[in-house]
Picture 1 (tube, rainbow, N blue to C red):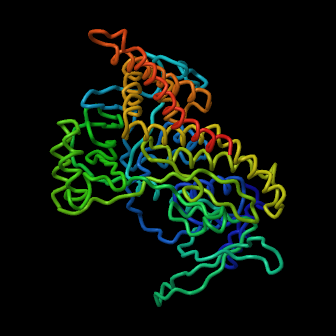
Picture 2 (picture 1 turned 180 degrees about the horizontal axis):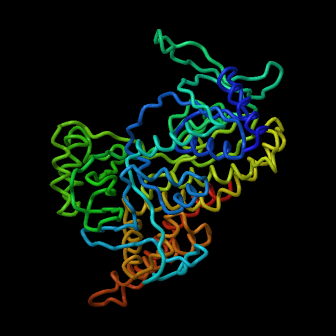
Picture 3 (picture 1 turned 90 degrees about the horizontal axis):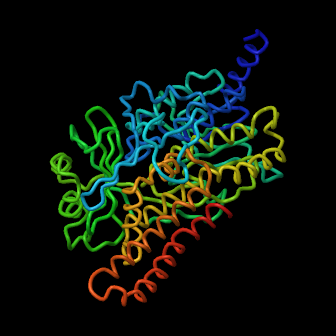
Length: 500
């Protein structure tokens, strides 16, 4: 580094630390906030990264990073952040339907990283990408340490309370915060200024309404979490999706050498988890745990012994909304969420950070005061990100609808989906789920392949036995209803996530 660039870096640091001025202010040192701060700093931008609490967070989601997220993390220069945190390699999924397993490994890829059997089948030998699962808090602290060590980033523990606007324009100039005085412990007003402000304040965002209007996440269920100690999963290094009779999906995945996360999906208002039925704990103990593999049940029951209701997180769907930046961009979970069943949230976040940083590269946007260039970049970002995010989001919502089936047609589709996996049609679906395949047409192909397989299986079941051929009209009626249900599940999601 030349003496001139060293001097410029030193001047920028002084501006950040003494005058609280930078090229960009990033609010929220979580998954997306750290990633975009680091990416922009690597381009030579001066960055202020603001976080309310710098202590290690204790969350029950954001614990599985798909291969597509690992690839983006490495391109961001943050690949080392999965090291040294007792992260566990993840090789794919094991879907257990009514106690019958179906192994779905991540697909084989060629030398260019393309899935060989994207449209059908399963590769037997070859290179396969891997994901990682871990304690969320440990991973976050690794990301924060990377930001703290970057010469172009100043990290400040402070509570952001509102945005700052220009006196004569609606342009956002930065944020007002409350910073704790280390001597007195009292919070004092503070101000941070940037040519661009990026807010990633999470699923409970207080800035969402200000930025994208009155858009609220749709929540139909919650995940209740247990941490199982020294349990044995049926398939090591695989995430498990367990679907039992009259139960909703349960996720199992190892997050450390001795720890395994169990997430129990409990929809809002179901009778089996009502107070009269003994509440959520009784549902987990008497309905969900018996559906788990036998090797897991003892550890799950032991984790319930404290008598407390397990910690929970809402399973939210928040489709993305176009923004017209006025010096402010809202991103991360504040901007876009999907059901965490498929573990795609962090993969979306890292790919978003990678794409946005490339569109804001100094060669394209030399100065963040150029509001026209920022608007153009954000518009391109909104549409281009759909190549991966529409897949992850649609897949998460559609699979949850199938796995939590609550009517006859959805049960038929659920059975067809499992049979599809049993027949070895796994590389395409798992490549989509893992963020490796970024072609929405592949998702449409596999979804409707499952639908037509479901029609066939249902027709065979109806026409089985004596006088079977005379039941053909009933099979035809059922086929129309199943196809209609599949279209009602899939097409509105595709329209909202892919074309709006």
